[in-house]
Amino acid sequence: MNNAPQAPEMAPMIRTIAMPADTNPAGDIFGGWLMAQMDLAAGNAASRRARGRCATVAVEAMTFHLPVHVGDEVSLYARILSVGRTSLRIQVEAWRRERHSDLRERVTEAAFTFVALDEKGRPRAVPAEGS
Image (cartoon, rainbow, N blue to C red; front, top):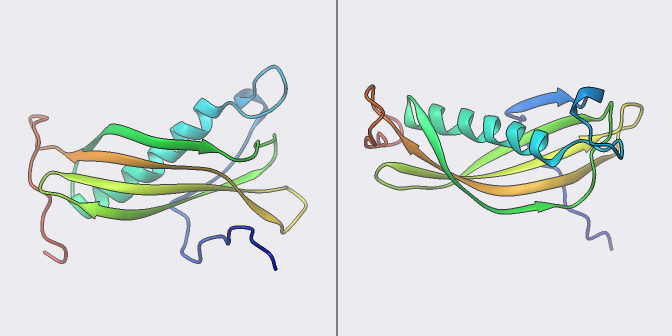
């Protein structure tokens, strides 16, 4: 029985290629680069749902499972976990695919919390879904 995680069946929020400029001295992709990509994916999901500007206020349980290498295709999947009055909590998973392979592996996951902001940068209510 295979207990490996299954890649999400939804479209990724972001898909990018890991490049040499994003590496550490060991040749692996910096965790900070990957976290930034995850924050962009979560921010995209948050601003879509909140219908406007949002800011990251917390990142929980960032777990790095496997390294990302130069040339890997990195797909970032975002799923809204909960919506409060002014905040949203979003789960993001990062998956890698080697350049010449179809094998996909989950490399990182974390939960991001965002607050919806008005035009003056103050918290505002997240609109009801569908409105």
